[in-house]
Every structure is written in C-alpha cells, then in structure tokens.
Length: 433
Image (tube, rainbow, N blue to C red; front, side):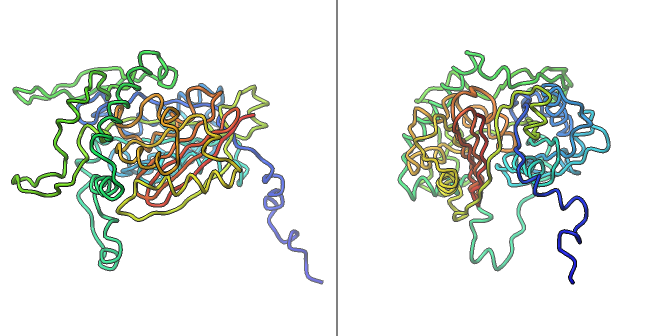
C-alpha cells in the first residue's frame, strides 16, 4: 500500500494548513524626509544608512526586538552602487538586526516598494514568518550618475516592443497626445499638487511619518566649485515649491520639444520640469507581522494585507497601468471605485494621474488630497510608507506608474486601495476592522 502523501512530507509542510489561516498586518512605519537629489541633504548619504535608519525606527515604533525580524524586503529602483550589494541585508545589519536576519532586494522600478511590502506579507502568510519588513530606498544622487550608463537593447525585442527602452518622459508625452490630455490640464493639476503638499506640511500631516536623520552633505560653492562637507539634519521633505504659480508652469518649455541644436524634436511634447516629478533621495520601512502576534504584543495594527494582483499594458504608454490593475483588484475584493474614500495616484507625471483618474472615474476631490510626487519628488520605491500613514479611519487607494502597471490595495478600518503602474500593474490590499 502506498504511503500517504502527507506522511512523506517533511515536518514543516504539514503545518501549511495552519499557516493558510494567518493574517498579515502592518504594525508600524517610518521614513526619512525626502531630499532633492544632487543638491539636497542626502546627496552623499549611503543607501544602507538611509534604509537602516528607517528600519531601525520602524522596529522601535513597533516595540519589537530586532532579532524577531526574520527577513527584510527592500525595493530599489537602481539596486547598484550605494544601493547595491543586496541593500536590504546591509540595511538590516545597519539598523541593528542580528546576522540571523536575512534580506532581499527587489526591483520593479517605481513599484519596487509596493512589491517589497507584498513580499514581506507573503512570507508571513505563506511561510509562517512571525515578523518581516518591507520598504524601499533610492539614492538618485549617488547612483544615477555613476551606475546608469544607458541601455543595452536586444534585437528581437527592439523590433517587437521598442517601448521597453523608451525614456519615461517620452511615454508620458505619448499618453498625453494619444488620449488628448491638454498641456493646460497638466499644469493646472501640477499647481494643485504643489498647493496641497504645502497645505499638508503647514498642518503637520507629514510630521509623524518622518524620523529625523543626522547626516553630512556635500555643498558646492557656485563661484569656486569647491566642495565642502556640512553636517545637517533631515527633518522634513524639502523638494516642493509652495510659491509655484500657474503662469510659471505654463511658461516652461517641454523637455522633449527641441533637440540640443534648437531644431524641432517633438512639437506635440507637453511634459515639462513643472508637470513632472523631480528626483529625490530617501528611504522608508514597514514592520509586517502576524495578526495574533501583534495582538499578543498589544500592537494596534495600521492595516491588514489582503491581496496582490498584476496586469499589463503597452510599454510605450506605461502610465495607464493603474487603469489596468485597479479594476482587477477591486473586482477580486468585491469593491468598486466609489467604495474608496481616498486615492493616492502616482504623480511621476501629471498625465499619469489625470488619465488614470479619467479612466477609473475617480472623484478628483478624493485623489492625492495631500499632494504627491510632482511636488515632493518621485519616490516609488518608498511609496508604501506614505500609503499606510495618515488618516487611518478613511479607506484609501494608491496607484503608481513605472512601465508595468503595479497596484497595491490598502484597506484600513473599512475599505481602501493603493496602486502602482509599471509595465504590468500590480495590486496589494490591506484592511483593519
């Protein structure tokens, strides 16, 4: 008589029926302030230090022992140089986790942080891990100049999907032209983003998110070009421009309008430095743990992870990814767009937010109510922290974009959603009772 399959399995495998009943909750979050790339306060801060700082404070806020963290998942848009060598593991050690804590670095470009949080939740749900960390980091200042040397194309893919290697600015111009999003609408929306961020900062809505960090920055003398080292503390996001006016935005020349010699490049270009996100440096982390363990420790969960979904779109119009991912995720959870009270929709470019808002039928008064990437900088790898923080009594959803169409759903004390658009569209869900 054949031996029953269960009897042939290793001991840990027989516990999977118990693991399937687990619930992953977000216990705490922490992030650095966001600093302007190249000229900002993090322009010479190693990625392990920024991420380690966020992890350390997330652990402290959760009130857990660092030794309880089994694995650390960190999303990174450029996982090389100062954010290379498995930045997740290095940051865990920097934060004071013991050598028994592992780490995995994840790259989905602007969706990297969402994927990292989903991966942390998955290891709690499917593998029985008691505590994991998900988060993200990007150091554009240290990594883009030295590590981004251009692309290496592949012959077959270049013929079939040339948009894979297209700069994101070009894809944004394509979406605006292809679907009739006007330059005026882009600039008006960008002004609103700046105004909302300024109002949120004045009201102190970001203060609790940020763990101030001491560091040293490089300051270049404009006249002599001499570089000096200055001790600074990053206490807030310094990327936005509260004094922005519509007239200033409307007067900017589109980035892809002319060639370097002044000749025409794209007369239909609409993306400018004012209606696209700027570049920023920073890091964020979240403690994800099993619900019963959180309850035993007296931790009030910020959210419950409920699911993760992906979907795809054409590479040359990567910005519409949220419109692919959001309906799929909402459908699987029995929700509609109208069930969501707050939306955070990626602002890598104003056209991304506007076109997805139109396609999904989102009330503009519910979307990006405290500003977004246009004002404080593109930080997709860090985004999950901001999704989980803030007013936990209101359901929210946040789509991001980077070429695939990734989407994460965050539900807290009701119903909520978070999303990202990369070249596929991913979706994650969280909720609290």
